[in-house]
Image (cartoon, rainbow, N blue to C red; front, side):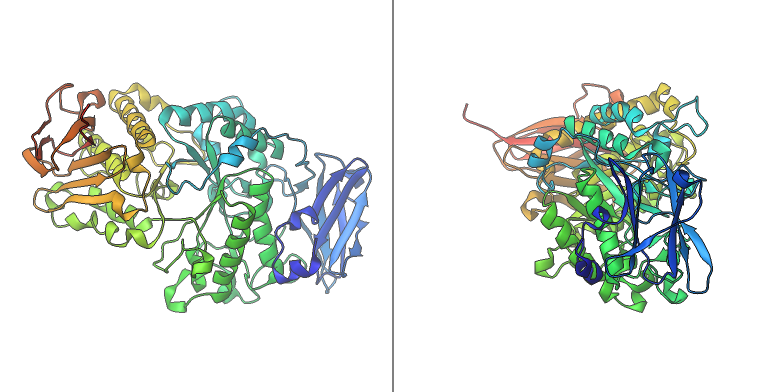
Amino acid sequence: MDIYGFYKGECFEAYDYLGAHLSKDGTTFRTYAPNAEKVAIIGDFNDWKEIPMFKASDGNFYERHIDNAKEGMRYKYRIYDKKGGFCDHCDPYGYGMEVRPGTCSVIRSIDGFRFHDARWLNERTDCRDKPMNIYEVHLGSWRKKSDSGDGWFSYSEIADDLINYVIEYGYNFIELMPVSEHPSDESWGYQCIGFYAPTSRYGTPLQLMELIDKCHKKGIGVIADFIPVHFAVDHYGLTEYDGTKLYEYPHDSVGYNEWGSRNFMHSRGEVRSFIQSAANYWLSVYHFDGLRMDAIRNMIYWQGDENRGVNRMATEFLKEMNSGLKSRHPSAIIAAEDSTSYPNVTAPVFAGGLGFDYKWDLGWMHDTLEYFQTAPEYRSRDYHKLTFSMLYFYNEKFILPFSHDEVVHGKATITQKMNGDYDIKFPQSRALFMYMMIHPGKKLTFMGSEFAQLREWDEKREQDWDLLKYPLHDSFHRYIKELNRLYLRHTAFHYDYDPTNFVWEDCNNVNKCVYAIRRKSASGDILGVFNFSGKKLSGYRLRLEPSVKVKLLLDSDSQTYSGSTPDGATLFRHSSEALTVTLPPFSGQLYLIKKKTNS
């Protein structure tokens, strides 16, 4: 490792030097503790009795080789501060940890798995003009075993079922909620303790590699949720690691955030090298196809508060990290979860941006869900909540998210949010997902939404799979499959960031709550027509250019999907210059429009 580059914050491979490295004759341990009085190592290999570590490199690193330290053995660093006290810490760069409530690092190999995805990696793109339909998953609560204490499947055990499921439903990416090690199940991985250790809840590093490799074999990309902002407060982790505030801010006024966790001090070179090396580690070692970076608002602004101003050191770090990651992994996807209006988040660094590929459109998400939570008689008042998004859409490269954050903590699930009684929630939810699909932006849906889960997500329970025996839920999941299939098939959906691809055919029908959107492509246009009122609308007319063919692709109100419109019913008439449509309440229709050919 380039020590000078490590201090400058330019290192992206610090994990190759620091941590526990297995070899044929034992394990070499290294840790960075510049302010420690002394450091010892304790573990299964020495009956938890101290073995002193020696100063290495420039004296700020400690190192020790132990012959009998083998794969699967637990260990910690005992770090003495200048006052004579000590604390036993897990390894900041450790490749593995034991299952909670244990707090030890575990010696793990990351070299024993052979990937078979060279072709996938060579052909992989950032999907700028390709479909990206993301299924967000919490591995511990997608499905559970009934014959074990916590009920978790291992990475290996869940792989085939999960992959086959997302293929069946028409998703082409999986986004895993944080799989880096974390002490508390309730944090869902966002209060991280082991930034280089896949959580042992679901198995070993090699088993996670197997899951990703199998995804690639079946044409499924995998995105990891990554936390560059903060870390868990537990003292066995990064907190006051060498007896001083090494990774965190020295002053508590900026050292803690609203989640009660410690903020990384992004101005320190060692901290920068730690975070960006971890990001590179997941992309390089595990072959993840991208990273979704959490809580970027709290890096752009001090404590996430615009009134406190821009955190220049953190934004400069984001630029440097993203540039370094993209130079190493040009086709990997780097996405920001950012709720601010800070400009140029997805612009390249050389053009003055932060260098992300995508940004979550949380404004679109909030406006859309608020609209559908509103009673139909008030939707004309809120009509332009659904048109506002296109006024700013081309400022960034957006992903449209209905994520885990929207189905917890009293917010209700996506379908449950729909206004009204049980029966009328389903047609509204079907129309909502069709509107999401035709709106420009890549798509992200949290598990359970695809079959209209009605119970809020709980990380301790698996999804309510028995709902599929009820007709409304069974037809809903078949509808989502067909909608996703159309999205993957038709290229008009894919050119999200080309302004010529999108046209409002109708965005002023305020009193009737009707909208019409057209997405264009050389292989045929897709037209979406929506009635979000509670009243049927007959004879709705849209002008079309002459010499086109019109085909109905999907009707959200079809009886096939538990709607009210009989299968085969005539919903539209197409004359030489106009399309006349019947729109049931709370419905959407997708049409394929193609030019007529002489043949």
